[in-house]
Length: 251
Image (cartoon, rainbow, N blue to C red; front, side):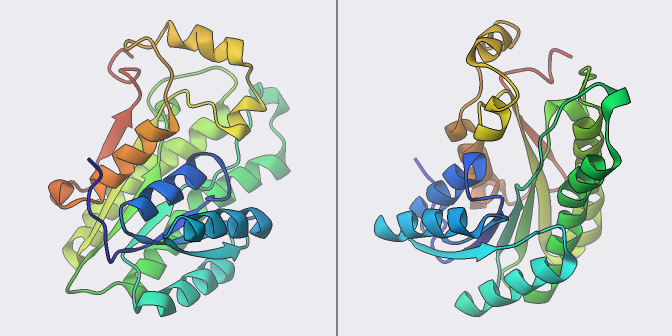
């Protein structure tokens, strides 16, 4: 059963496709009003239109969330829709794997900007636009690479390691102000970005190494985020919820 998130205003970054797109539909299906933010405004508009066509409420935003002014501008506009922002989900990320000797400065900078800077701007946006009487939540996206060493993932792992630590720090710092900060750590979900790097056969092989012997799905991730936003998770703060079939546990 989906939790009732009616009345919540939730801004999701990287929601133009993949995990973010599914999450936007899922949370709208729980009754939330969603802000669909993506670097590709056309994708964001398409997702928002599909949500509205299904009877939900959604607003589209295009822009680079690594840029402080751009992020805060999106948040300012979204806050006018309901008078506040209840949740920001930092889902946007650039995915790239390569040996460490092939890491390029430009790509590394872009990955760090999107993955690490955006949660800072999200915290600032929530502090500005939250209803202090209601409280607010931030959800970050971690990864098993933050806990285990996977060759050729140095740039991605560095970002996700930083996000994981930042989740704990912000949970401690913002908790007294009524903002819960948690992260979801999904494993081996064949998103469009990931499928550009790995074949279906690679995912089938990965499934044999996961304790539950299957790869992750969009539904696994969306259900976990929805749970963390539900009243049942009201005492979760500074936590990383591993939605990975046991990958982290078997490290």
